[in-house]
Amino acid sequence: MLFKRCVLGYPALMIEDQAEVAFNRPLTSDTWLMGLRSAVISGSASPGQFVMVRVRKGADPLLRRPFSICGVEGDMFLLLYRVVGKGSEMMTGIAAGGRVSVLGPLGNGFRIPEDGRELLLVAGGIGIAPLLFLAHRLGSREFRFMAGFGSADGITPVQEVLDLSRPLQISTDDGTKGYHGPVTDLLQGTLRDCGTGSPCSIFTCGPRGMLKSVARIAGKDGIACQVSMEASMACGLGACLGCVVPAAPGEGRTYYHVCSEGPVFDSAMIDWAAV
Amino acid sequence: MEHHQPDLRVRLGTLELKNPVIAASGTFGYGEEYASLVDLNQIGAIVVKGLSLKPKSGNPPPRIVETNGGMLNAIGLANVGVETFIREKLPALRKYDTRIIANIYGHHIDEYGELASMLKGVESISALEVNISCPNVECGGMVFGVDPDVSARVTERVLKNTDKPVIMKLTPNVTDIRVIARAVESAGAHAISLINTLTGMAIDVDSRTPKLANIYGGLSGPAIRPVAVFMVYQAASSVRIPVIGMGGIMDARDALEFIIAGASAVQVGTANFVSPAATLDVLDGIRGYCEKHGVGRIEDIVGSLKKSH
Image (cartoon, rainbow over all chains, first blue to last red; front, side, top):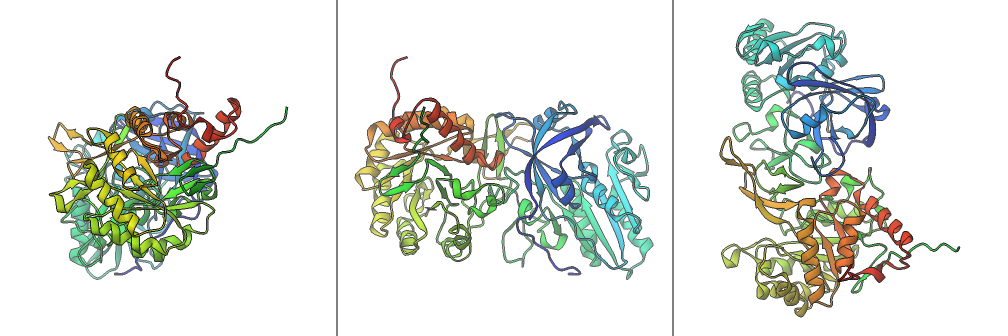
């Protein structure tokens, strides 16, 4: 392993805050961007961490919803979310000026290597959210950012979210924009360009099938790969024990908890065959 | 007018709590998970995640799915095991000024006895809560708590191996809760707590697969509260030992329903996931209710249901 495995305990600066909604607007037909003001959460959040949002009071929906933080601007943090169900549907109805109960920042976040290695960011769909935050934090440091989407109309208009120092390489499943094919093809092409032996690190988030492919590519060449995992969870605090992912053989345990031991894992820690 | 703070202390047999609000097992970890968000010193008691003799990793995911007004879980009783709990979790928890109740479960009657023995000398544990909602390997996987005789035998075994107050936690998945409540009372239980989760199932109709990898799970949350209030009412009407009520309590008025139905104390469970300070919000609300209604002691309204309007 190239990096010390960093399984964090409970984050020191984590609060339940009534964050003010600065704005909430659609970016594509099914993705929205919400800006929330919370000095504590914005001040302590690092890329890869997430928040638990109570969409509204009452029993419908009952549980909070987990969202990766996709950026920070001053005392405001950003959530990029896809409208997939009841909770996210209701979120689109929250107007600017309203307040939302947010618990966070939660989880461990990405570890950014300090040497000058090449950093490869690989996103699939809404999985772009934590990687946008990471890319923004990287500032002028060298990185390559590849993002795959289903179709041209689903592409996240990144310029409307954050200023990044370099453009994204886009792929679409249907070829309506950018490379026609999976984003993992772009990753493999990039790795060929880099040439074997030149050190690099992969940071990835997206659908599980895509993550499996990225982990396989990274594992084959022994490339360090940090994966941000998703799981259904009730608390985000390590109490409900709902959000497990299978641990790789030899890890000395059956499962990892996404909320308290992740959501970012070295890809070698996960049993991808069982995911 | 002189203003008196209501007396919120409750007695559950020999177990005394400074107030009637308890964090329910499985929803509050080992306490430490919530310590930065909630002042644990203010909670009446914390029931820790159910303990088994050996560590248990639990069921495959998905383990949790939300349903209307509730959640289904099939965690699979994952826990660190009783020895690790005593060695690694308890030292942090016992620093707080709250009662710690150890929840225990087994798959053989012997395991319950062994767990009770192992916790016997552990001073910071104030009581045992015994989960009998799990399958009994000796009876082909039938849940202990659905059979009055088996429930009584588990109670006796635990009592034989401990000097701590024993709370039997009952499953609602039974024909008549009163029969089970009386059986564990006769066997010597100091208190009962109910309800554990209601067994349920949810299906994704597009894929025609169960939403939980375990196929079925336990339903909790506000959806089950009326069922729970009635079962607490039934149980409290048929035993003399104290009853601890739970099932979908989200706020103080929910908790008061249980108290008026006959519960001496309440447990807050699923609400902790939604609102980490739910226990303290419930406590504040109960205090406010007592002040508003001139209730001097919370114990005065336990089982105070009026049968007519």
